[in-house]
Amino acid sequence: MNWNILYAMMAAAAGSFIALQASANSMFRRNLALTEPWYAAFFSICGTFITAVVLMLTFRPSPPDMEAVRSTQWWNWIGGPLGAMIVLAGAALTEKLGAAAFIALVVGGQLMCAMILDHFALMGLSEQPITWGRIAGALLVVAGVGCIKYL
Image (cartoon, rainbow, N blue to C red; front, side):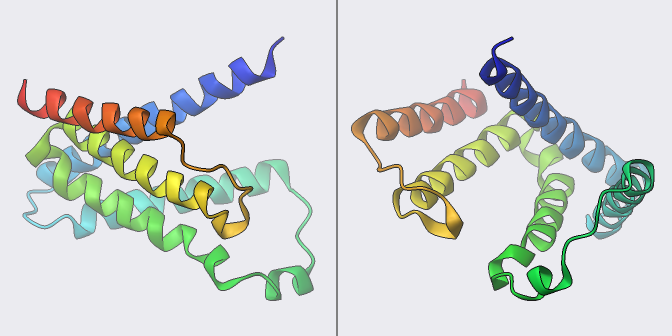
């Protein structure tokens, strides 16, 4: 089996989960009769925590060395807060923009940030310079966002 194809399929599935999550959180906010997205995001994150606990109890992975935990860079700890912001954005914006436009804009933002991270080898990534091909690809994504939103 070609593992790259499997990994690509798994990444695509994760992308579909983001679209499903944003739509579910948006409807959760509406079904709770809330004008603000805070509780929808909070309950979604509670679900994330419960899922993580169940998986930890099921698979019982070995804990990391505490010295390794203490010596990590500060930015290793921002994944949770950033994830919470994504959940909050989905709950707040999906209904206003539509699921496709919201996800297209999320992907566009991810792509722009990822290209910068790759180009400057930030956050422990290996350097992958920005090329004209990558710029063209990013511009096509931006054009796709426009098509999804306005055509």
